[in-house]
Amino acid sequence: MLQMKCPECDGIISSSLLVELGSITCSQCKENVIVKDVFVTTEAFTMYRDTLLDRIRHYRTLLKEIEREKISLGKSDVSSTAAQKSLNQNYAALRELLEASRGNYRLKISQELPLDLEWEGNVTNGRLLNLCTKGASIKPKRLHGFPQKGSEVKLRLALPDDAEPLSIAAKIAWIDKNKNDEEQNSITMGVSFINLNEKTRACIWDYILAHTGATDNLENSNSILSISQNKPILE
Image 1 (cartoon, helix red, strand yellow):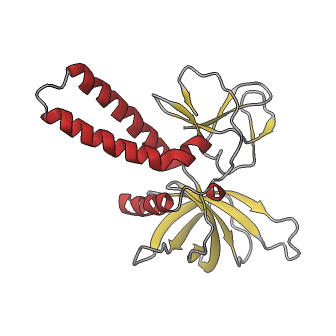
Image 2 (cartoon, rainbow, N blue to C red):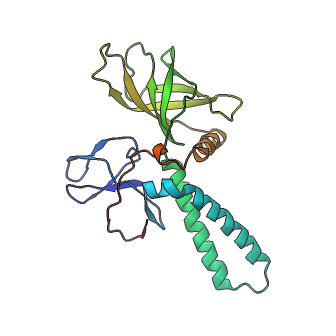
Image 3 (cartoon, one colour):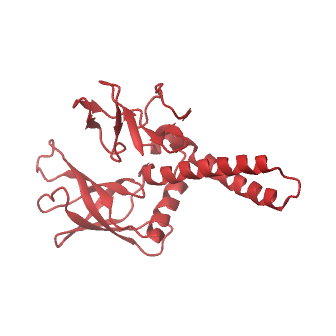
């Protein structure tokens, strides 16, 4: 779950769109506030999103090490029940954190990836701005009229290491029109993927992990503020 602290009322704002929007309306005080200091919350942890993005490879490596240790302890005749229980708890918590990141990790795309967008019989190409396993932000290069929020589209996305382009059904979650465009025919849109199969999801996730680590790839990078929570915030 993605959350942030409302700077106006100190209430918690929860939304899966926090990685996409520049501002959001707080459901409690009804004020429109700037999106910043987003954190990911799971049953075991609360972690600032930027921290998670910066350390995700480290956490994946750590999870693999714990998996090997679990196997080793399982074969040992001298391992204690307490040690096994502690390892299992750490493994479960870390796995939950990584699963949460899989849906909330949005990678800023710095390279040109072939992308086709099909909408109401029209086919156009576009530029992928960012990507996660739940959706993407896209800037279509040519559109005949504007699609509506909620419209369904089809994407064909070619990733470098995949032989065939990915075919993805999606729904338009938001649209931002470029008011400075003289032709008034330039938009940026956010799409949410529909019924993404596990193979396609894995391809997207593998691409994201292969291109993380550089600070210029992190979306919405913000400074860390102190937030009081019942669960620990990892920094």
